[in-house]
Image (cartoon, rainbow, N blue to C red):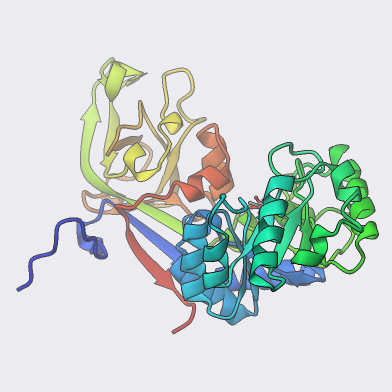
Length: 383
Ligand SMILES: *Cc1c(COP(=O)(O)O)cnc(C)c1O
């Protein structure tokens, strides 16, 4: 028998796990195809933050198999993992490159997204020193004010001699409020980006994220860059979700108990039992990435976190603890809920968007926070 080395972590067996996370790679592939068809252009996949919590090593090969050839990550460390999973893909690092790391991009065949003049200067100088034009994207900011050249600087790119030192392989910008089609900033960003792109007709252009693909007046440009919708998030929050669910999360019932009238449950006694209630304690908590903000008080019980038990929606009662959540199962028939059973925390119609809303956040944060103590199972994908 081998003794596991300290610090190594193998897969967690389902029977030992407090939570079971199932990731459907066929649904991921199908979502990518839906988005590609909808975009009507070449379609990349944004796989930053461990493919929105689903796992770069599993998600990237499934997406390559579906036909995806371009990937975006946020960090170089993620790009290296994506490269190992997709030896022939085009990979961009959205956060650009840190001074002195240009050679790493070259060694791994990764492309930086250049978002400032100093970055452009350094990449151009690096390429000049190598005597070769290596590809990079240029980010033009049209409203986010985080990364990217200002629009006026984007308009000045044409004829800039630095663009001869490297290969400007993509011109991109990012939408501020694409999930709100009525927001006036969408049209302003489309207009500003179109103007810059028109001055650089030889460079492929990319604007749409998941929600951008569904904007009625979105020009096609060359490349769409969806993330969230690939993983089942709703890119059209005001309408039915066109995507298939990718992530399912179940939590294990550790104990069933009852609370008498007037007793409280959980830290700070934030929830008080009205009459006799049957409670179940789940082996999932905020240390697993389930937000503490999904807990309830007497004032908002039912509006916050939920679990589905035998088809019924059961509210979280009291605070979410580090490792535990308490739910009220009074409405579930006694013989339909047993210690050791699992209940649904994401799935069966309780989607990541609703889980996010009920925790006062967004589905993106739910996905990227998915914990490391769950037993993970991947369905479908590449054999
Ligand atoms: C995260 C990100 C995307 C993907 O956005 P979604 O809303 O997840 O589809 C696209 N472009 C940039 C620059 C990003 O940072």
